[in-house]
Length: 227
Image 1 (cartoon, helix red, strand yellow):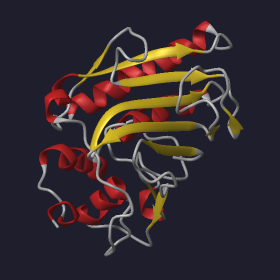
Image 2 (cartoon, one colour; image 1 turned 45 degrees about the horizontal axis):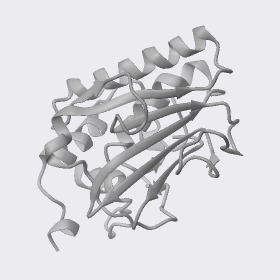
Image 3 (cartoon, rainbow, N blue to C red; image 1 turned 45 degrees about the vertical axis):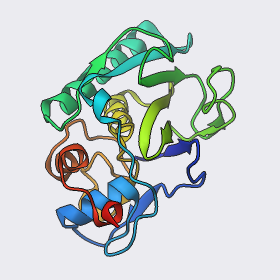
Image 4 (cartoon, rainbow, N blue to C red; image 1 turned 180 degrees about the horizontal axis):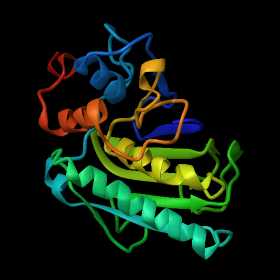
């Protein structure tokens, strides 16, 4: 995603690789390992592989926890519709996870989304959320709290200044990344992927994007996990 960042909280590397550069099309295995653990083609994982615990996967809750007062009602409606569409795309895959949207504050939901007034490239302030305040917001940011390779909580921040035509795509990618697929891909063959580093236009999970999410929760472990 253009101008996006994934940040790991807890006992995990603080400086995580944001994207993998690929020269051409990848096999399904290469694509999965790239988005799941930042592995360049034919190379080792650069990030830990993280998943939600099995006992939560069929009822992961998602909430639009806070929205800046600077957002006009019609703008909020765009974020609301984009979030519903993102959850619909993910649930339709039968990928081994199911997301339920709730109305609730942080602590009452697994994946908490905040629409903030911070302009892209500026430091977030006054959100009141540890893990967001004090960090630069490129355009969207995902912060994962994890322990023993299991995700415990996901925080998503999106700038209210995101362009209208990009909002649905940003939400789809951020929620997908909150499921553990944390790395973008940079390459001419992947401009129409939800994981594309240089664009925010994809609003459907198809092809290798869909394969990667199914593989993450339904497929066999990678060699990195078995070793």
